[in-house]
Image 1 (cartoon, rainbow, N blue to C red):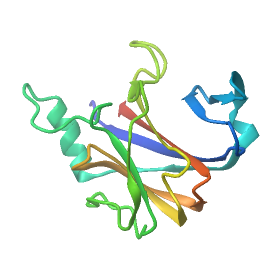
Image 2: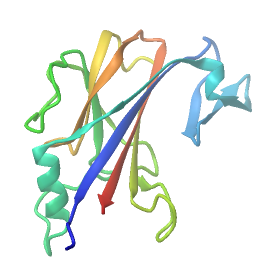
Image 3: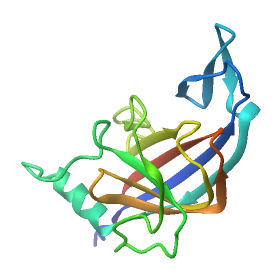
Image 4: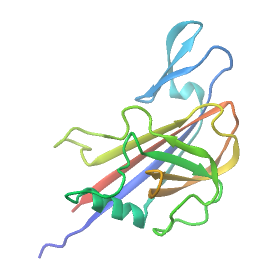
Length: 190
């Protein structure tokens, strides 16, 4: 007897960076390294030099998220896809519990951040390792956030939440800090 089991597993990684003041300006965040403009020349900076906090946690795909994924498989989808043009990640300070019924951040901090260039994308090539993993990334640049005890994050299309997660331990941001939110959703079928 074949027993069908499918699901979506996910995780969120929140990275807080503090970059030196002066002429440094982030130009590109890709493959866990950063390229900065320093004194009119490009230099390669690795995450660990300026990484101040890393938070990794699981997430819940919401009821709206389940419906959005099903909608994508329809002949004529009716919902807005969580793509580079519409996908956003938001953070907040009001986490109470992970429930599939959550429809918004409890207490949003700042504005939703749009997807970084080239996101979302598949982690692996088709028919290869990680071809079932979708990666999302949004970067809140210095000045975008100033909040104490960020403890929740949400991934969505600007109207509905696809996924929701607790950020623990909590993250405190100043206007000098950059926050990078990486989200992975893995589609499972066993």
